[in-house]
Image 1: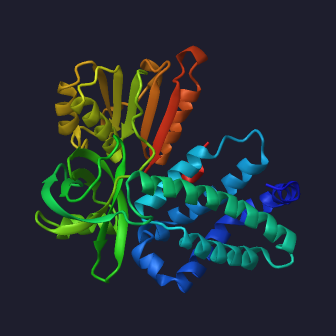
Image 2: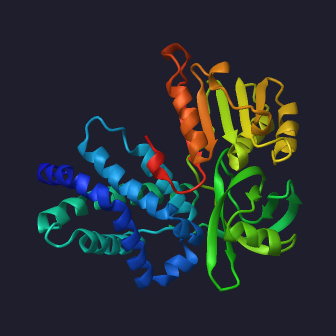
Image 3: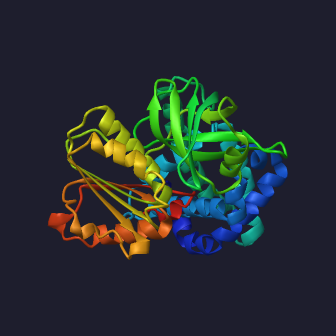
Length: 378
């Protein structure tokens, strides 16, 4: 980033940050007004209604700008990797970045005013945007190439070959089609056409796989999952994308600690499935929190997997019994920790990990989010 622009961004970052929520709302209103097909066919309407997508944009732009101008800020690689994988799971292509740029900068001017967004300010923030966009575009091209497909060509027609109700709110679906092998912990975007004609997408973790198929666990919450429960049966065809996601079980000899809450168990089950399938003897601990044993949707699945992994330490905590995960009670020193759950759960576990003395600290901590809240990063 040029020194002059860096100074301008640093000086205007507090103002932009203070207004980024309004900027984001204005941006989406403007973009969907100009491109209604994006709301109908690409962006999740539920996240738009709840404001989660706006939070994601606010976080990614403001956080990336902070990282550029603050030498003490963390490296943006985790932020960009998470966004890049999510974009690939939605089939985002390079040309769409110009659409975002034009509507975002129109929103910035509308909210802050032309007297504030001078030519110098606009140029500085334009550079922030395109630095971020260029990194993401290059990264996403690599991800598409790694699957041997053209940019955006990730959607596949798949057949539902099994549907199994685990609890009143969680159902598994096994999907068969021209699907690539998923890395343990990854997800797929499921696309369904709703009664109003909109194709809506949502990501679900892959809890099991065989050549050419994925098994996903779906908690009934929102338009897509409700449609799947009520309308999709064995033999039906829906759309799924090739696997994506940067929360993956890395190869190595380090001990593994998997920590989840509720339906956050799904990527962990994918990792346990991989460990069982490969006959791994890697030291591992699995900690899961749920409301009760009755609501622990994947208890049966994980129990079956853990029978194949006798060296894995497991502990379940049920809130109805007054139980919470106490990370300090488990051996995590030098381990690779993987987390998935709701925002408050993630904050609490990360706080507990950060409070451990150096000699008991893990080697790394990676996590996945339920919704597009990248503002949690860092």
